[in-house]
Length: 245
Figure: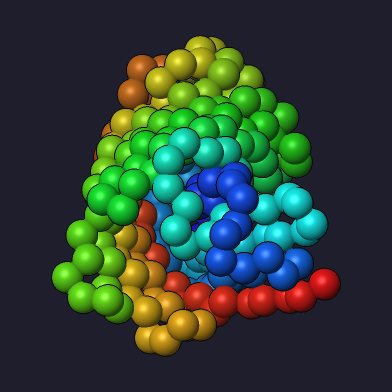
């Protein structure tokens, strides 16, 4: 039932810098869709199939303003967003009596330090649509490139949320079959992500992602949490799209 719980968790890893190789004004990004699986809702012990999407900004150039580029390493700014699908309580026995939760779009940014072999990032996002609360994500990746076409990366992830975020997805209020529960903000989950990217050519890539998150603190203790262990994955075909202006 992942059409009700689609998560796009993707940092736009494009450090801000001056482009030395291409000064033409333009925009280049990757976008793709593919099959996925994930918990039916945060804390569910059951997974369901659905559709996942990926978006990654590769390059933006307008006059003296430049973002991105394949050879940009060092400390830079990065953008981040995540989409969380709506949660309909009537679809799940464990959520009986709870209010439905609208779909949310988190938008934000932060800092990233990137090298050819690893990166480290910290971003803050706000729910501009939906939950209207703050979350922060911290992580890093190690890279391994056995061929020019194949890239592996993997590393730890931490997700922190404020009180409003924790209460929205893990709190209980007024459900006849459940004890009221006030979830406090803090560390929501800790886990790891692994991803393999195969470049078919310069424009097309296949990206396979597997992520494990363990719910922590009040998120783990919530009466609606059936399992602390949350596993999700996807296989997405992406296409580079380029515009000049």
